[in-house]
Image 1 (cartoon, rainbow, N blue to C red):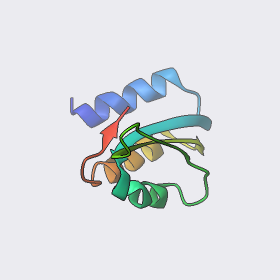
Image 2: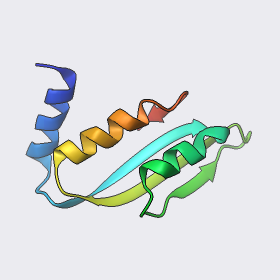
Image 3: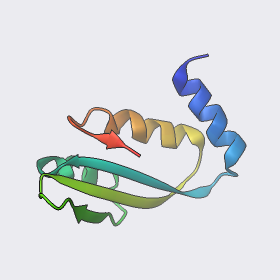
Image 4: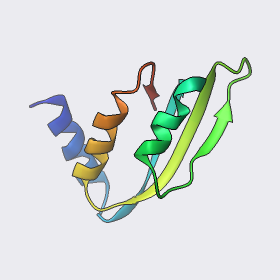
Length: 85
């Protein structure tokens, strides 16, 4: 089973959709706008690292399905230097 399919299966076992889901990422400071694009209708909570090189981003959004979560993570992986939490 592909890693993506396993992740989707675990999401479906753990959640009843639709549901609120929290996305947390750490990105280089200059990549924050690329994360904001993933959540155009949602407020992001941003917190800069002590050195200012990185920013922690948190978005709580209503998702309709595990597929929607997987798609957001796929798009996020395109952001250079991203760490998904």
